[in-house]
Figure 1 (tube, rainbow, N blue to C red):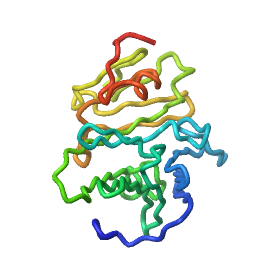
Figure 2 (tube, helix red, strand yellow):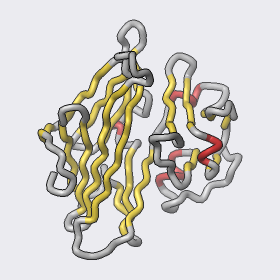
Figure 3 (tube, rainbow, N blue to C red):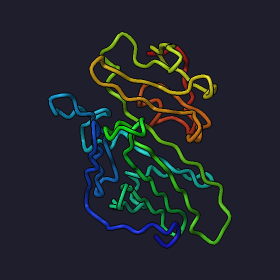
Figure 4 (tube, helix red, strand yellow):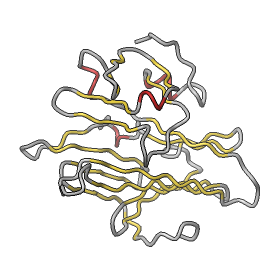
Length: 220
């Protein structure tokens, strides 16, 4: 990588599989999904799995212009295979390169049974001008939809309706579960750069709304 120094092989798609988790990246759509493996080896998608899972995506705001990285025609998309990780790479021509690096690790040092996907995001200004850039990700969760409540936090606070979270340190993480499988988004910790804001809402409210979605708390 001419900007970041990564050594890689470009591939059309890639499966990163270890322990209880599997990550699938698709270069044609610039999209990904995460799967958990149960005791019988069955793979359970942890995010929406329809239409090439493009409903989970990242966006980049450059000045006033917003680019939906996996759908915008002006953004090129590719997948990279590295020695110990894999990457989704997006390039906004002559403006920015975004690299999302995924690696699979275990929560316990002495345990080879991987259960964590670590995500590092690198946003590089490749233009000759100073530019303000902001990055966000949208995750189309599915596990909690049939449960008594859609989400809960590390502090056991349940979330059943639209909510905007700014007290990231108190929340720490968001969990979505169907009772058999779960996905946990860690928002705060020693090795985690906390986001500015987290919004839980109907997908359309997030996708079609403003950069920071304006929602009515308490809505379904």
